[in-house]
Image 1 (cartoon, helix red, strand yellow):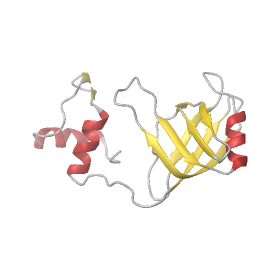
Image 2: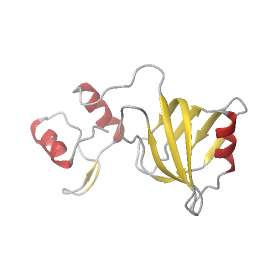
Image 3: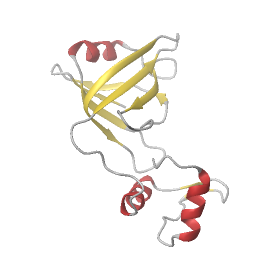
Image 4: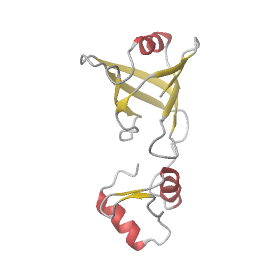
Length: 144
């Protein structure tokens, strides 16, 4: 999220008493609550909330190797509070892109997320399996 390495996080934990405590993991590889870290990063100007309408590029891959790129206008990435939860991505697309997305297979042997990015940012999502949850004729799609 902050585009820094482990050393920066170790320094923040040592030097800032208000850095969130780990909720799981080990001393070498601690796990933190996502919303607590996001709040801390925002409060300390380590990340910014993008302003205005944005465009995202969603790249999916089929099990056979074919890659599909989709443009999402006004993307909304809803991240779960815990590591076991699934992230949901919503956004406007052309009817052609939404139809192509709906035709992709999902699950273990189906489509997987290669990259989700917006101009001027690093990757915004962790790669993994993806499936279409809902698709409206207006071009609004929700993926999980």
